[in-house]
Length: 449
Image 1 (cartoon, one colour):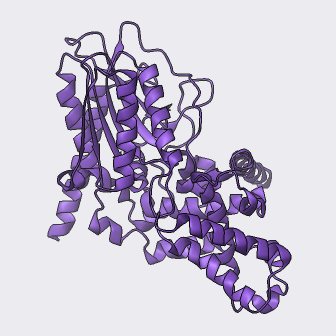
Image 2 (spheres, rainbow, N blue to C red):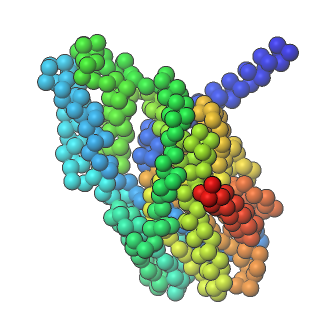
Image 3 (cartoon, helix red, strand yellow):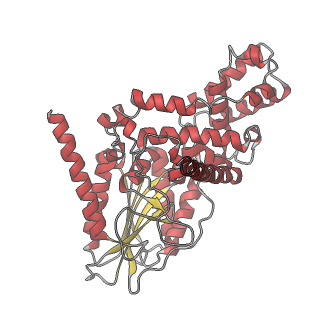
Protein backbone atom coordinates (compact mmCIF):
# COMPACT_ATOMS: atom_id res chain seq x y z
CA UNK A 1 0.00 0.00 0.00
CA UNK A 2 2.81 2.39 0.95
CA UNK A 3 4.64 1.51 -2.27
CA UNK A 4 1.47 2.19 -4.31
CA UNK A 5 0.95 5.53 -2.59
CA UNK A 6 4.57 6.48 -3.27
CA UNK A 7 4.17 5.61 -6.95
CA UNK A 8 1.01 7.69 -7.23
CA UNK A 9 2.63 10.69 -5.57
CA UNK A 10 5.69 10.36 -7.80
CA UNK A 11 3.46 10.15 -10.88
CA UNK A 12 1.51 13.25 -9.86
CA UNK A 13 4.69 15.20 -9.18
CA UNK A 14 6.17 14.18 -12.51
CA UNK A 15 3.07 15.48 -14.32
CA UNK A 16 3.19 18.75 -12.38
CA UNK A 17 6.90 19.20 -13.06
CA UNK A 18 6.36 18.49 -16.76
CA UNK A 19 3.60 21.11 -16.90
CA UNK A 20 5.78 23.64 -15.10
CA UNK A 21 8.65 22.93 -17.47
CA UNK A 22 6.38 23.43 -20.47
CA UNK A 23 5.31 26.89 -19.36
CA UNK A 24 8.84 27.81 -18.32
CA UNK A 25 10.19 26.76 -21.71
CA UNK A 26 7.57 28.91 -23.46
CA UNK A 27 8.52 31.89 -21.29
CA UNK A 28 12.22 31.37 -22.05
CA UNK A 29 11.46 31.54 -25.76
CA UNK A 30 8.84 34.28 -25.49
CA UNK A 31 9.15 36.46 -22.36
CA UNK A 32 5.88 38.31 -22.97
CA UNK A 33 3.92 35.05 -22.45
CA UNK A 34 4.50 35.60 -18.73
CA UNK A 35 2.37 38.74 -18.77
CA UNK A 36 -0.88 36.87 -19.62
CA UNK A 37 -3.28 39.45 -21.11
CA UNK A 38 -0.33 41.72 -21.98
CA UNK A 39 1.18 39.02 -24.20
CA UNK A 40 1.93 39.94 -27.80
CA UNK A 41 0.10 38.17 -30.62
CA UNK A 42 2.46 35.91 -32.62
CA UNK A 43 3.91 37.29 -35.85
CA UNK A 44 3.22 34.07 -37.72
CA UNK A 45 0.77 31.19 -37.37
CA UNK A 46 1.44 27.60 -38.52
CA UNK A 47 -0.64 26.78 -41.57
CA UNK A 48 -1.65 23.32 -40.39
CA UNK A 49 -5.44 23.27 -40.64
CA UNK A 50 -7.23 19.94 -41.08
CA UNK A 51 -8.83 19.60 -44.54
CA UNK A 52 -12.60 19.73 -44.56
CA UNK A 53 -14.63 16.54 -45.01
CA UNK A 54 -15.02 15.67 -48.68
CA UNK A 55 -17.40 17.95 -50.53
CA UNK A 56 -17.73 20.53 -47.76
CA UNK A 57 -16.56 24.10 -48.29
CA UNK A 58 -16.35 27.10 -45.94
CA UNK A 59 -19.17 29.59 -46.48
CA UNK A 60 -19.55 31.61 -43.28
CA UNK A 61 -17.26 32.94 -40.55
CA UNK A 62 -18.40 34.15 -37.14
CA UNK A 63 -15.74 35.87 -35.07
CA UNK A 64 -15.06 37.65 -31.78
CA UNK A 65 -11.66 39.28 -31.46
CA UNK A 66 -9.83 41.37 -28.93
CA UNK A 67 -8.30 44.68 -29.95
CA UNK A 68 -4.64 44.61 -30.91
CA UNK A 69 -1.62 45.73 -28.91
CA UNK A 70 -2.21 48.92 -26.95
CA UNK A 71 -0.61 51.20 -24.44
CA UNK A 72 -1.34 50.37 -20.81
CA UNK A 73 -4.83 51.53 -19.79
CA UNK A 74 -3.91 53.74 -16.86
CA UNK A 75 -0.79 55.44 -15.56
CA UNK A 76 -1.37 53.88 -12.13
CA UNK A 77 0.11 50.58 -13.31
CA UNK A 78 3.42 52.31 -13.98
CA UNK A 79 3.24 54.70 -11.03
CA UNK A 80 3.44 51.92 -8.44
CA UNK A 81 7.10 50.99 -9.13
CA UNK A 82 8.01 54.46 -10.43
CA UNK A 83 7.11 56.35 -7.25
CA UNK A 84 9.04 53.82 -5.16
CA UNK A 85 12.11 54.39 -7.32
CA UNK A 86 11.76 58.17 -7.10
CA UNK A 87 11.57 58.03 -3.30
CA UNK A 88 14.61 55.77 -3.12
CA UNK A 89 16.53 58.11 -5.40
CA UNK A 90 15.67 61.11 -3.21
CA UNK A 91 17.48 59.47 -0.29
CA UNK A 92 20.40 58.36 -2.53
CA UNK A 93 19.67 54.65 -2.21
CA UNK A 94 19.85 53.68 -5.89
CA UNK A 95 22.76 51.70 -7.28
CA UNK A 96 24.18 52.52 -10.71
CA UNK A 97 21.82 49.93 -12.19
CA UNK A 98 18.97 51.41 -10.17
CA UNK A 99 19.63 54.83 -11.72
CA UNK A 100 19.55 53.25 -15.20
CA UNK A 101 16.19 51.68 -14.35
CA UNK A 102 14.77 55.00 -13.17
CA UNK A 103 15.95 56.65 -16.39
CA UNK A 104 14.28 53.89 -18.45
CA UNK A 105 11.06 54.31 -16.46
CA UNK A 106 11.03 58.05 -17.13
CA UNK A 107 11.40 57.40 -20.85
CA UNK A 108 8.55 54.87 -20.87
CA UNK A 109 6.25 57.23 -18.96
CA UNK A 110 7.01 60.11 -21.32
CA UNK A 111 6.24 57.91 -24.32
CA UNK A 112 2.97 56.67 -22.78
CA UNK A 113 1.63 60.03 -21.57
CA UNK A 114 -1.80 60.85 -23.06
CA UNK A 115 -1.79 57.53 -24.92
CA UNK A 116 -3.26 55.41 -22.14
CA UNK A 117 -5.24 52.58 -23.73
CA UNK A 118 -4.55 53.69 -27.30
CA UNK A 119 -4.00 51.12 -30.03
CA UNK A 120 -0.34 50.99 -31.07
CA UNK A 121 1.05 50.64 -34.57
CA UNK A 122 1.77 47.01 -33.72
CA UNK A 123 -1.92 46.52 -32.90
CA UNK A 124 -2.86 47.75 -36.38
CA UNK A 125 -0.36 45.39 -38.00
CA UNK A 126 -1.66 42.42 -35.99
CA UNK A 127 -5.21 42.84 -37.28
CA UNK A 128 -4.07 43.31 -40.84
CA UNK A 129 -2.09 40.09 -40.62
CA UNK A 130 -5.00 38.19 -39.06
CA UNK A 131 -7.32 39.46 -41.81
CA UNK A 132 -4.82 38.46 -44.48
CA UNK A 133 -4.52 34.92 -43.12
CA UNK A 134 -8.30 34.60 -42.78
CA UNK A 135 -8.71 35.66 -46.41
CA UNK A 136 -5.97 33.28 -47.57
CA UNK A 137 -7.22 30.30 -45.57
CA UNK A 138 -10.90 30.65 -46.51
CA UNK A 139 -11.04 32.29 -49.95
CA UNK A 140 -14.44 30.70 -50.60
CA UNK A 141 -15.93 33.01 -47.97
CA UNK A 142 -14.48 36.26 -49.35
CA UNK A 143 -15.67 36.10 -52.95
CA UNK A 144 -17.02 39.02 -54.96
CA UNK A 145 -20.15 40.57 -53.41
CA UNK A 146 -19.72 38.68 -50.11
CA UNK A 147 -21.14 40.69 -47.22
CA UNK A 148 -18.73 41.22 -44.31
CA UNK A 149 -20.48 42.82 -41.36
CA UNK A 150 -18.17 44.15 -38.65
CA UNK A 151 -19.18 45.39 -35.22
CA UNK A 152 -17.13 46.88 -32.41
CA UNK A 153 -17.55 48.03 -28.85
CA UNK A 154 -17.46 51.82 -28.49
CA UNK A 155 -13.85 51.88 -27.25
CA UNK A 156 -11.54 53.61 -29.78
CA UNK A 157 -8.87 50.86 -29.81
CA UNK A 158 -11.55 48.31 -30.71
CA UNK A 159 -12.97 50.54 -33.43
CA UNK A 160 -9.50 51.01 -34.91
CA UNK A 161 -8.91 47.25 -34.78
CA UNK A 162 -12.14 46.73 -36.72
CA UNK A 163 -11.16 49.37 -39.27
CA UNK A 164 -7.73 47.79 -39.73
CA UNK A 165 -9.27 44.37 -40.39
CA UNK A 166 -11.90 45.62 -42.83
CA UNK A 167 -9.40 47.86 -44.58
CA UNK A 168 -7.11 44.90 -45.21
CA UNK A 169 -9.97 42.72 -46.50
CA UNK A 170 -11.06 45.46 -48.92
CA UNK A 171 -7.50 45.74 -50.23
CA UNK A 172 -7.50 41.99 -50.83
CA UNK A 173 -10.88 42.10 -52.58
CA UNK A 174 -12.35 45.56 -53.36
CA UNK A 175 -15.64 43.92 -54.42
CA UNK A 176 -16.52 42.81 -50.90
CA UNK A 177 -19.62 44.44 -49.40
CA UNK A 178 -18.54 45.65 -45.99
CA UNK A 179 -20.29 47.40 -43.12
CA UNK A 180 -18.90 48.68 -39.82
CA UNK A 181 -20.78 49.67 -36.69
CA UNK A 182 -19.90 50.74 -33.14
CA UNK A 183 -22.88 51.61 -31.00
CA UNK A 184 -24.04 51.52 -27.39
CA UNK A 185 -27.12 49.68 -28.63
CA UNK A 186 -25.10 46.47 -29.01
CA UNK A 187 -23.07 46.64 -25.79
CA UNK A 188 -25.58 44.36 -24.03
CA UNK A 189 -23.89 41.44 -25.76
CA UNK A 190 -20.67 42.88 -27.23
CA UNK A 191 -19.26 43.92 -23.84
CA UNK A 192 -21.67 42.69 -21.18
CA UNK A 193 -20.30 42.87 -17.64
CA UNK A 194 -22.87 41.12 -15.42
CA UNK A 195 -23.19 43.16 -12.17
CA UNK A 196 -24.31 40.17 -10.09
CA UNK A 197 -21.47 37.91 -11.24
CA UNK A 198 -18.93 40.73 -10.95
CA UNK A 199 -19.74 41.11 -7.26
CA UNK A 200 -18.75 37.49 -6.64
CA UNK A 201 -15.54 37.49 -8.72
CA UNK A 202 -13.27 37.36 -5.68
CA UNK A 203 -15.03 36.02 -2.60
CA UNK A 204 -13.25 35.88 0.81
CA UNK A 205 -12.76 32.17 0.22
CA UNK A 206 -11.20 32.80 -3.19
CA UNK A 207 -9.01 35.57 -1.80
CA UNK A 208 -7.76 33.27 0.93
CA UNK A 209 -6.83 30.58 -1.60
CA UNK A 210 -5.12 33.15 -3.81
CA UNK A 211 -3.10 34.63 -0.95
CA UNK A 212 -1.93 31.16 0.06
CA UNK A 213 -0.98 30.30 -3.52
CA UNK A 214 0.95 33.53 -4.15
CA UNK A 215 2.68 33.73 -0.74
CA UNK A 216 5.73 31.79 -1.93
CA UNK A 217 5.82 33.41 -5.37
CA UNK A 218 6.01 37.11 -4.47
CA UNK A 219 9.10 39.20 -3.96
CA UNK A 220 12.57 39.14 -5.46
CA UNK A 221 15.49 39.74 -3.10
CA UNK A 222 18.00 39.44 -5.96
CA UNK A 223 16.34 42.36 -7.75
CA UNK A 224 16.32 44.46 -4.60
CA UNK A 225 20.05 43.95 -4.09
CA UNK A 226 20.67 44.84 -7.72
CA UNK A 227 18.83 48.18 -7.60
CA UNK A 228 19.15 49.45 -4.04
CA UNK A 229 22.27 50.12 -2.00
CA UNK A 230 20.72 49.00 1.30
CA UNK A 231 17.68 46.78 0.65
CA UNK A 232 17.07 46.33 4.38
CA UNK A 233 16.88 50.08 4.96
CA UNK A 234 14.86 50.84 1.84
CA UNK A 235 12.06 48.41 2.70
CA UNK A 236 10.12 51.24 4.37
CA UNK A 237 9.88 53.01 1.00
CA UNK A 238 9.73 50.03 -1.34
CA UNK A 239 7.27 47.16 -1.08
CA UNK A 240 9.31 44.30 -2.51
CA UNK A 241 6.37 42.24 -3.75
CA UNK A 242 4.55 45.11 -5.47
CA UNK A 243 7.76 46.59 -6.86
CA UNK A 244 8.96 43.30 -8.35
CA UNK A 245 5.58 42.54 -9.92
CA UNK A 246 4.88 45.94 -11.47
CA UNK A 247 8.40 46.65 -12.67
CA UNK A 248 8.34 43.33 -14.49
CA UNK A 249 4.96 44.25 -15.99
CA UNK A 250 6.36 47.57 -17.11
CA UNK A 251 9.18 45.88 -18.99
CA UNK A 252 6.96 43.25 -20.56
CA UNK A 253 4.31 45.74 -21.59
CA UNK A 254 6.88 47.59 -23.71
CA UNK A 255 6.69 44.69 -26.15
CA UNK A 256 3.31 46.07 -27.30
CA UNK A 257 4.71 49.48 -28.27
CA UNK A 258 7.33 50.87 -30.62
CA UNK A 259 9.82 50.43 -27.75
CA UNK A 260 9.71 46.66 -28.15
CA UNK A 261 13.40 46.45 -29.11
CA UNK A 262 14.42 47.93 -25.77
CA UNK A 263 14.57 44.90 -23.48
CA UNK A 264 16.64 46.45 -20.70
CA UNK A 265 13.94 46.17 -18.02
CA UNK A 266 13.06 42.62 -19.06
CA UNK A 267 16.72 41.62 -18.80
CA UNK A 268 16.62 42.37 -15.07
CA UNK A 269 14.44 39.30 -14.56
CA UNK A 270 15.23 35.65 -15.06
CA UNK A 271 12.88 33.24 -16.80
CA UNK A 272 12.07 31.81 -13.37
CA UNK A 273 11.11 35.31 -12.14
CA UNK A 274 8.76 35.74 -15.06
CA UNK A 275 7.38 32.25 -14.59
CA UNK A 276 6.38 33.03 -11.00
CA UNK A 277 4.63 36.18 -12.15
CA UNK A 278 2.78 34.15 -14.78
CA UNK A 279 1.58 31.79 -12.04
CA UNK A 280 0.34 34.73 -9.97
CA UNK A 281 -1.57 36.27 -12.88
CA UNK A 282 -2.87 33.01 -14.30
CA UNK A 283 -4.39 32.04 -10.95
CA UNK A 284 -6.09 35.42 -10.57
CA UNK A 285 -7.61 35.27 -14.05
CA UNK A 286 -8.96 31.81 -13.26
CA UNK A 287 -10.41 32.89 -9.92
CA UNK A 288 -12.14 35.90 -11.44
CA UNK A 289 -13.18 34.73 -14.91
CA UNK A 290 -13.12 30.92 -14.97
CA UNK A 291 -15.47 28.24 -13.67
CA UNK A 292 -13.83 28.38 -10.24
CA UNK A 293 -16.06 26.96 -7.47
CA UNK A 294 -14.44 29.37 -5.01
CA UNK A 295 -16.28 32.29 -6.61
CA UNK A 296 -19.49 30.39 -7.30
CA UNK A 297 -18.27 28.75 -10.51
CA UNK A 298 -20.56 30.76 -12.79
CA UNK A 299 -18.65 33.76 -14.12
CA UNK A 300 -18.31 32.51 -17.73
CA UNK A 301 -22.11 32.81 -17.95
CA UNK A 302 -21.56 36.56 -18.03
CA UNK A 303 -21.18 36.01 -21.79
CA UNK A 304 -24.45 34.14 -22.22
CA UNK A 305 -25.92 37.01 -24.27
CA UNK A 306 -22.96 36.98 -26.65
CA UNK A 307 -23.15 33.22 -27.13
CA UNK A 308 -26.89 33.40 -27.84
CA UNK A 309 -26.25 36.19 -30.34
CA UNK A 310 -23.52 34.18 -32.07
CA UNK A 311 -25.93 31.24 -32.37
CA UNK A 312 -28.82 33.42 -33.60
CA UNK A 313 -26.63 35.19 -36.17
CA UNK A 314 -25.29 31.86 -37.43
CA UNK A 315 -28.78 30.38 -37.71
CA UNK A 316 -29.78 33.36 -39.83
CA UNK A 317 -26.73 33.38 -42.09
CA UNK A 318 -26.90 29.64 -42.68
CA UNK A 319 -30.19 30.24 -44.52
CA UNK A 320 -28.55 32.53 -47.06
CA UNK A 321 -27.32 31.27 -50.41
CA UNK A 322 -24.27 33.52 -50.53
CA UNK A 323 -21.26 33.30 -48.22
CA UNK A 324 -20.65 35.90 -45.54
CA UNK A 325 -18.77 36.86 -42.41
CA UNK A 326 -19.62 38.58 -39.14
CA UNK A 327 -16.66 40.03 -37.27
CA UNK A 328 -16.92 41.39 -33.73
CA UNK A 329 -14.24 43.38 -31.91
CA UNK A 330 -14.03 43.76 -28.15
CA UNK A 331 -12.03 42.86 -25.08
CA UNK A 332 -10.23 40.04 -23.27
CA UNK A 333 -12.66 40.25 -20.34
CA UNK A 334 -15.29 39.05 -22.81
CA UNK A 335 -13.22 36.62 -24.84
CA UNK A 336 -11.80 34.73 -21.85
CA UNK A 337 -15.16 33.84 -20.22
CA UNK A 338 -16.63 33.06 -23.65
CA UNK A 339 -13.85 30.53 -24.30
CA UNK A 340 -14.48 29.03 -20.86
CA UNK A 341 -18.24 28.97 -21.44
CA UNK A 342 -18.05 26.89 -24.62
CA UNK A 343 -15.39 24.65 -23.06
CA UNK A 344 -12.56 25.05 -25.57
CA UNK A 345 -9.81 22.44 -25.27
CA UNK A 346 -6.45 22.38 -26.99
CA UNK A 347 -5.65 19.57 -29.40
CA UNK A 348 -2.80 17.13 -28.89
CA UNK A 349 0.16 17.80 -31.10
CA UNK A 350 0.05 15.83 -34.32
CA UNK A 351 -3.60 14.84 -34.13
CA UNK A 352 -7.24 15.82 -33.64
CA UNK A 353 -7.68 14.32 -30.17
CA UNK A 354 -8.37 16.78 -27.32
CA UNK A 355 -5.48 17.56 -25.04
CA UNK A 356 -5.75 18.32 -21.35
CA UNK A 357 -8.85 19.46 -19.52
CA UNK A 358 -10.50 22.38 -21.21
CA UNK A 359 -10.95 25.95 -20.16
CA UNK A 360 -14.24 24.95 -18.54
CA UNK A 361 -12.11 23.38 -15.78
CA UNK A 362 -13.57 23.43 -12.27
CA UNK A 363 -11.12 23.12 -9.41
CA UNK A 364 -10.52 24.64 -5.99
CA UNK A 365 -6.82 23.79 -6.17
CA UNK A 366 -4.89 26.53 -7.93
CA UNK A 367 -1.81 24.29 -8.16
CA UNK A 368 -3.74 22.15 -10.67
CA UNK A 369 -4.11 24.89 -13.28
CA UNK A 370 -0.84 24.18 -15.04
CA UNK A 371 -1.25 20.42 -14.94
CA UNK A 372 -4.76 20.71 -16.38
CA UNK A 373 -3.67 23.09 -19.12
CA UNK A 374 -5.59 26.17 -17.94
CA UNK A 375 -3.10 28.67 -19.34
CA UNK A 376 -4.73 32.07 -19.79
CA UNK A 377 -1.89 33.42 -21.93
CA UNK A 378 -2.92 30.94 -24.62
CA UNK A 379 -6.36 32.55 -24.78
CA UNK A 380 -6.05 36.30 -24.80
CA UNK A 381 -2.86 37.91 -26.06
CA UNK A 382 -3.34 41.30 -27.69
CA UNK A 383 -5.27 40.67 -30.93
CA UNK A 384 -6.60 37.30 -29.74
CA UNK A 385 -9.62 35.90 -31.54
CA UNK A 386 -12.16 33.11 -31.65
CA UNK A 387 -13.28 32.08 -35.13
CA UNK A 388 -16.21 29.78 -35.99
CA UNK A 389 -15.74 28.49 -39.55
CA UNK A 390 -18.88 26.97 -41.13
CA UNK A 391 -18.94 24.38 -43.95
CA UNK A 392 -21.55 22.89 -46.30
CA UNK A 393 -21.80 21.23 -49.71
CA UNK A 394 -24.26 23.76 -51.12
CA UNK A 395 -27.01 26.10 -49.85
CA UNK A 396 -29.45 23.16 -49.61
CA UNK A 397 -27.13 21.11 -47.37
CA UNK A 398 -28.76 20.76 -43.93
CA UNK A 399 -25.82 19.03 -42.24
CA UNK A 400 -23.81 22.13 -41.43
CA UNK A 401 -20.35 21.48 -40.03
CA UNK A 402 -18.10 23.97 -38.29
CA UNK A 403 -14.83 24.14 -36.43
CA UNK A 404 -13.43 26.57 -33.90
CA UNK A 405 -10.09 28.35 -34.15
CA UNK A 406 -8.64 29.96 -31.05
CA UNK A 407 -6.00 32.42 -32.17
CA UNK A 408 -6.17 30.79 -35.60
CA UNK A 409 -5.40 27.29 -34.30
CA UNK A 410 -7.88 24.40 -34.28
CA UNK A 411 -9.29 23.44 -30.90
CA UNK A 412 -11.67 20.85 -29.49
CA UNK A 413 -15.11 21.26 -27.88
CA UNK A 414 -16.80 19.21 -25.12
CA UNK A 415 -19.32 17.55 -27.43
CA UNK A 416 -19.28 14.35 -29.46
CA UNK A 417 -18.23 14.46 -33.08
CA UNK A 418 -17.53 11.90 -35.78
CA UNK A 419 -15.32 14.25 -37.79
CA UNK A 420 -12.96 16.04 -35.37
CA UNK A 421 -11.94 18.82 -35.33
CA UNK A 422 -15.20 19.52 -37.16
CA UNK A 423 -18.54 19.42 -35.35
CA UNK A 424 -22.17 19.28 -36.40
CA UNK A 425 -23.71 22.71 -35.83
CA UNK A 426 -26.97 21.19 -34.63
CA UNK A 427 -25.12 19.36 -31.82
CA UNK A 428 -23.23 22.43 -30.65
CA UNK A 429 -26.33 24.57 -30.87
CA UNK A 430 -28.39 22.09 -28.82
CA UNK A 431 -25.62 21.72 -26.24
CA UNK A 432 -25.15 25.46 -25.73
CA UNK A 433 -28.80 26.45 -25.65
CA UNK A 434 -29.57 23.69 -23.15
CA UNK A 435 -26.68 24.82 -20.97
CA UNK A 436 -27.77 28.47 -21.10
CA UNK A 437 -31.43 27.66 -20.44
CA UNK A 438 -30.48 25.60 -17.39
CA UNK A 439 -28.33 28.39 -15.96
CA UNK A 440 -30.97 31.06 -16.49
CA UNK A 441 -33.67 28.94 -14.84
CA UNK A 442 -31.44 28.34 -11.83
CA UNK A 443 -30.62 32.04 -11.61
CA UNK A 444 -34.26 33.01 -11.82
CA UNK A 445 -35.13 30.48 -9.13
CA UNK A 446 -32.44 31.88 -6.79
CA UNK A 447 -33.67 35.43 -7.37
CA UNK A 448 -37.20 34.44 -6.45
CA UNK A 449 -36.03 32.94 -3.17
